[in-house]
Image (cartoon, rainbow, N blue to C red; front, side):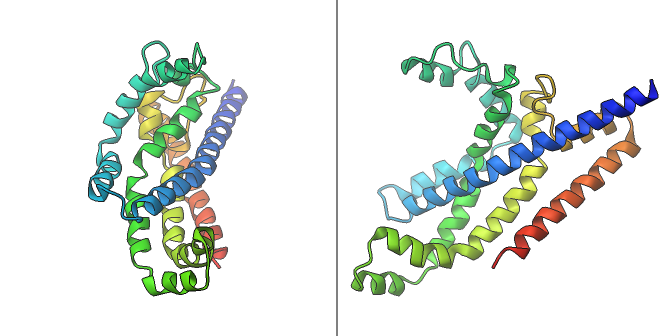
Length: 234
C-alpha cells in the first residue's frame, strides 16, 4: 500500500510538472508575440490610440477569479460564445474545452492571452523610446517596413523583450488561479499544475512537508530557466 501511495505521488508530480511545462512553453511565446504585435500596431498613431490602450490593458488588472468565471461561461460547450462562433464556420459540435482532457489545457492557454495588456504597455513604452532619427536614416536608405522592424525595432527592443520574457516565465510556472477556478486541475488531472498540486497536498491533504518539497522543486526549476535565459541573453 505504501509503495502504491509513493507511485501515485510520483505520477501526480510528473503529471503536474508536464502540464506546467506545456503551459509555460506555449504561453510565453504566444503572449510575448501577441503583446509585441499589439504594441507595434498601437505605436503607429492609429485613431483612438488612448482608448485602445485602455481597452487592452483593463483585463490585466481584473481579478483572476472574475476572469476565470467569465471564461468558464465563454467556453461553455452548450451556451458558450466561442462554440457559437465556431458553429458559424460549420464546427459543430465544438470542443468541450474545460470538460475535455484534450482541450482543457488549450483553454487555459487561450485564457492566459486575456491579460497581455500589461506586457503590451511595457513594449509600447520601449517602442516610443526608440529615437526617430534612426527610422529617418533607414528611410533615406530605402529600407521597407520589414527591414525597419528587423534592423532597428527588434534589436533596440531586446532589453524590453528580455524583461517581459523573464516575467512571463516566472508567472507561467506559478499559474494557479485559472486552473483552480476553471477546472480544479481536471478533467483527470489534465490541468493539474505544480502550484495547484502543491495546494492540494499542503492545504487540502495537510501534507505540509511534501508540499514544502514541491515548492522548493518549483523554485529550483524557475531559477534554472531564469538563469538559462540570462545565460542566452546575448
